[in-house]
Length: 180
Image (tube, rainbow, N blue to C red):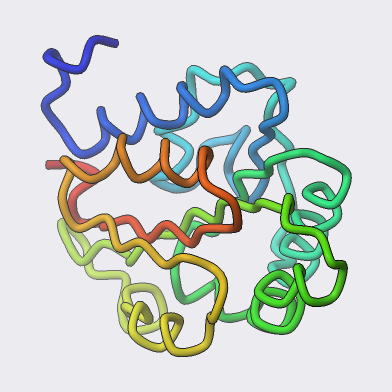
């Protein structure tokens, strides 16, 4: 997809995910990465199934698997459909991934975490699915870069930066912008 043809927030996400999938060491994992069930799925449809690992609802384990994959040289793009669900992985995120260089003396570990502030339009998912925890995560995470993708114009450069630069990234997408 050519950049000049892209119009929507979702189009930019699709392009960013396609770019990441072209890297030999990337894999996508999480809920609804291989089967429909949330908006993130719609950004991964063109990615080959062999690059995707569908997981059940076990967020802390998902983060642990992602860290293990990164320790083995992969760059996992680990997808948590709602920011609220990522709360269940905070132990692994804050106490392990954020401190991984200290724990291992390695600076080559990278996990790209995708999450979304749940959409309130056209249907409000309620407070358990639509909270924005960006400021709290910025305070909790000392080494993981937290990027809030408020504008579609940030998406490609931010995901390319997340792959290129050292360290892990938490990418926060805007669920209300997926369908604009």
